[in-house]
Length: 397
Image (cartoon, rainbow, N blue to C red):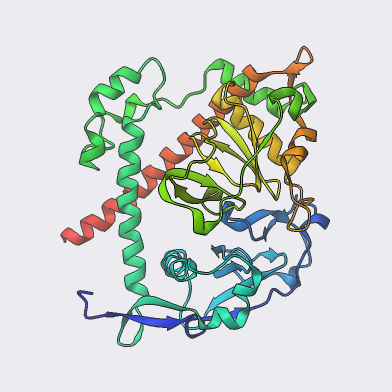
């Protein structure tokens, strides 16, 4: 480190005080329509399963890190929150935690935890306290200012690439797509050069078409027709993957899907001679968690594959969400696994027209959602670019 600091090895207990939640709330007994985050052990949405209202006496403090004991999922929680079972609370012993310090420390911790096996016994409090991580220090104390600056610069670098991607990707509408491509083709490599200038900013459109707008309005109304359909009757029998032990996996390029939320359930990239499932299909793991796959992959025996490859991609994304809502209800766990036969019996709720699934509506709706999300990303990027320019201008001075 140029400032005279150095990297040192710290135990978790030297950095953090580990607490047990004040009260553990069972997700199956909660109503998710409140104001406070309910943090569980999942890997999505910062671990937040939903929002609830319970006695504020049992809120865990904000500016802490939530740690899932049997999954090693960890997230910075800015605000006070409730939790479920097998969650630990990490509070910084000295100084005040913020999002950038947390991102840095979580990255270091994930590297240390990557060699642990999956299971709650690996992550009991005594074991957690003794785990060692490498962090930058200055004058024998953690260099928190360095961590903040490092993450700020890293964010700025990613924002550069994101802005370039938005300009060269196919996110323009049909009226401007060719113009946007021809005038921004070289921007991906040049990073921020001309990223938001007047020559390019007006070329990208995120406006909804009338059909997309109407789809959003219909979804928000009480007039959308829904039907309940059997998954097997719609897409044929689900196929169960085949077990491939860790020791037998040969490194390669094929994603191998297993049960779990981390890395979208991809546990390895292999070159073994296994069944290759087609892209544009859906997987449901042993816990009932459904995921859309836009790539070819292999799967183990804790995964059921739903064959949707001949349907429109956006419609399949909608169907994935509907399946997840029906299958991931807490019913399936280590003791009661979800298998292909459960997929064949699953009933899902889908938009309906003439007593059949309205795949066209699903496609249009997801296209609209994509545009709305991208619009939010662009607005977020613009704000971050302002912060980035402040950082770079300060360096010049």
